[in-house]
Image (cartoon, rainbow, N blue to C red):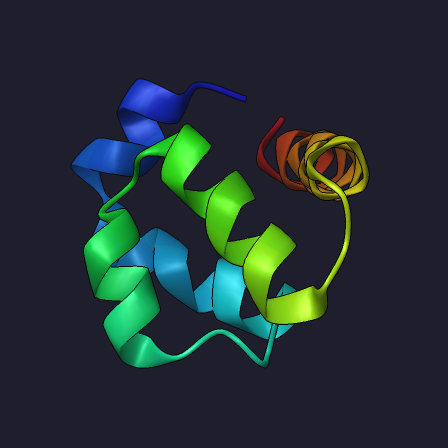
Length: 70
């Protein structure tokens, strides 16, 4: 998955992120603004998981989104 594309279309893409991580607030998603590292941090904090676990969740999400768009 290309994060430059996600960042450029964040308004549309954040709906997919919200569907996967529903506990993230709209304010958090606005702060993330397509920055992958920021999203990992938000997942980590909101869900009380390690950074490694949050990264793993995001990698899996990226795989699923890439499959849908190809």
